[in-house]
Image (cartoon, rainbow, N blue to C red; front, side, top):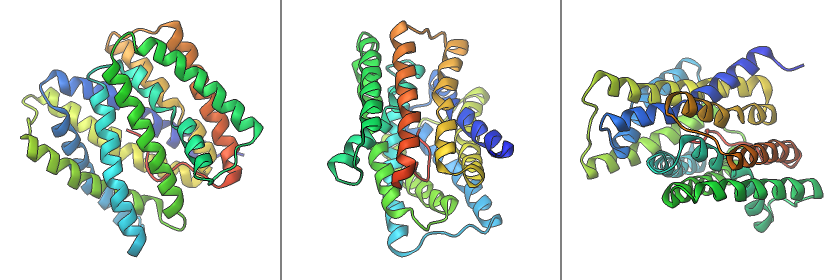
Length: 295
């Protein structure tokens, strides 16, 4: 029987992650640039995550694992840059749905690297995901090629991130590992913001939006995910996390004036359905969702 508290925690995590696009757009409208937003997101969330890890006595990785997770922090920062940059060019809903093509890319990369052998059901899921991707691109390319390209690059980097997490993550404390990843991301994004000369929020509304991205979309989202993960396990957690792009799409329609075409509806349904199917099949092969969420 599934833990009701675990379900609630994962859904809260998915809603928190899914809200980031709305708050990022609000910060952009107030004059905050992408590099500054990312630097503040990581820098403000790091102390809270460190406090939670300390109070919970979570173990920090050591040795090779520590270096690996620090390197993954660079990938995490790159993922975040692609995601938040894509929001300048494409709708938040399209960006979120394109990110969820990562199970397709993980499957292809795992097969090419001979990490995982694809079976008939997985090939079917990959085919459905590919069809969904074609429909999303048919809609997205009518709008902004840079936004589509950045969102797909985000999915590709996340796929590599997952494979690395699967390689180095066994035996590591998930929250302790996530803390190292966020610390690595903080160093990268702060350095980038300083190099580009940061543009700090000038209004309370802007600071509120940045604070929401950091507190709600990062600290709370990651903490509740790992708390739910401990109760439900990786497969069920990953399945429930597919609510995340639906939250982004809904908030975009409600507050950002975005709209849905039939290509996005059908393509998104195929992509998310295939993602759920691939997650179930992959559970039996040892490939798990990694120690941090997208975005």
